[in-house]
Image 1: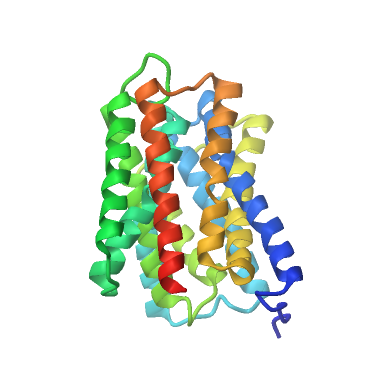
Image 2 (image 1 turned 180 degrees about the horizontal axis):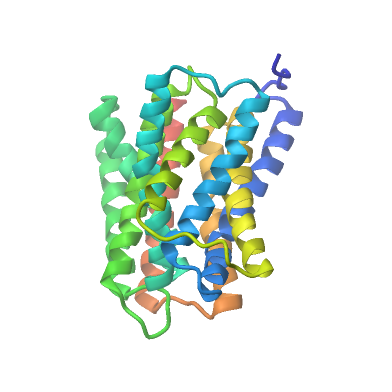
Length: 300
C-alpha cells in the first residue's frame, strides 16, 4: 500500500515539495555540464544519449518492479516503448548534438520553449482555449527563440545551424511528454511510464550507433551520474514534487534550471551568449514564466 501524502496545502507538503523541486532543478541543471565531460572523454553524442537512456531505464524498471507496477498489458507496454523512440530516443540524441554543436546554454534555453508547444498541443488535442493575451505571450516567446537561434548559440566563435535545429527539436520532443503522460497518468505511475519509454529510447539509439564498454573509470562515473541522477532521480523528484506543490508552482520554480545551467557551463566550459542571445534568452524565459502565471490565474 502506498504511503499517504500530507495534504498539498499543508506547510509540511509545501516544504517537502520545495526540497524535491530544488533537487530536480539542480539535477537537470548539470545535464549540460556532465554531457560535455562525457563528450570531452571521447564518447559520441549518440552513445552518451544511449547510456543516459539505458541507465535511466534500468533504474525505473527496478523501481517499478519493487513497487509491483511493471506488469501491464502488452499492448500498453508496446505503445509506451514505441513512444519512447521519439520522446526519449530522439529527445536525448538531439539534446547531446545541440550541446556539442551549439552549446549547453543554448540547448537548455530552447528546451524551455516547450510550454509554448504544450499550449498549442493542448489547444488542438484537448480543445483548451488560448486567449488573445496568451497568443501575444507565445509570439513574444517565439521572437526570443528567433533571437537565440540567430545569435548562433553559446559556444564562443562557433555557429551551427544543425545545432540550432537540434535545440528546437528537443523542445518539441519534451513538449510531447505532457499530453502523452496526461492521457495515461490516471492509469499508470510515472515509474511505469518512464520504465518503458526510456527502454524504447535506449533501444532505438542502440540500433543507430556502436556502443563500447571500453571507457575509463572516470568516464563511466560521468555516464552513471548522467543516467541515474538526471535520467532517473530528477524525474522521480519532479513527479513527487508535483503531488505537493502543483503544476504551475513547480513549473515556475523550474526556471532556476536554465539560470544554473548557464552558470555551470560558463564557469567550467567558458560558454556565453552574444548580446542578441542574452536578450532572446530573457524574452523566452520571461514569456514562458508569464504564460504559466497566466494559466494559474485562469485556473483560479
